[in-house]
Amino acid sequence: MLISVANSAPVRPEALLDVTDFAVGYGASTVVEHINLRVGRAELVAVIGPNGSGKSTLLKGLTGRAKVFAGHARLDGDDVTAMRGDRLARRGLGFVPQTKDVFATLSVEENLQMGGYLLDRKAVDERVESVYELFPALKPMATRTASRLSGGERKMLAIGRVLMLSPKLLLLDEPTAGLSPDLARHLLHEQVPNLVASGVSVLLVEQKALDALRIADYGYVLVAGHVQLEGTGEVLLARPDIREVFLGSAAQDAAPETPVRP
Ligand SMILES: Nc1ncnc2c1ncn2[C@@H]1O[C@H](COP(=O)(O)OP(=O)(O)O)[C@@H](O)[C@H]1O
Ligand SMILES: [Mg+2]
Image (tube, rainbow, N blue to C red; front, side, top):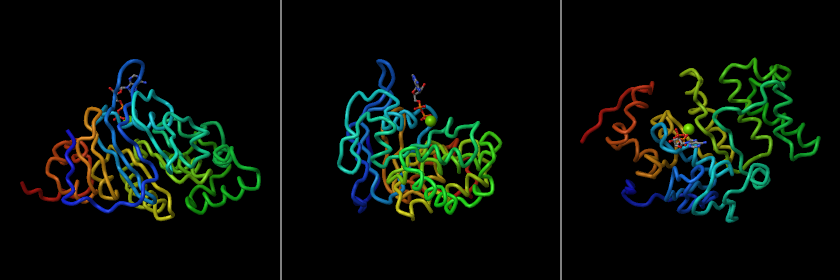
């Protein structure tokens, strides 16, 4: 059952991504269903939930990598249900998967150039420079092989590669997985908000649930394949049951505990 925890409906920007009654799974089995979710323009929306709740499956359903059983996904008003990679990329949707997110044997710059596969040569060079502006740490590593990057550098490259096509909407699947706490904090509290400030909408799937809610405009809590709660990051963070559901994540969370009143 969906519980909306907003006291009054929050004013949200116009929907860029509008997902209605979405059901996704594999083979004959549905993993997530009855998903209604929106991402507004320049909005940062978090999807949090325990391991195995279907977060990655939802993103795979949105990017043509898992079977869509029901529902629709609309991007900028166009039906993009079950559409695949390059067609979505042309429409401004970028996806950074949790793993296999860079070409390990290529250099940093070659990875970025590959990311610009739909652009002409001149546009590729321009975009590479703007990604270096966004992630200055990458530039001195231009010729380094991606397999020799640290976890944080690699994730920056993975995001940069997708930014080559100037997406309107970026889907990030657990970008902090495998990063040190410092790098994870930097990514969530600096780099992702900077992207949003530059006008990109972000749908962020995160295990670090409380951190994700702290930066999110709006959040959805996925439990066993269903959206159980939704609301602004602020409102969700104030819920005592959020901490209960995410005890595991709360325990890993580096931020100080805030007292919860019944
Ligand atoms: N390729 C697959 N084929 C069949 N079942 C899968 C596949 N990938 C994930 N699942 C199942 O879907 C459920 C949700 O997994 P997932 O979406 O990865 O969850 P989360 O990302 O929230 O941890 C799990 O029960 C998992 O075993
Ligand atoms: Mg996952």
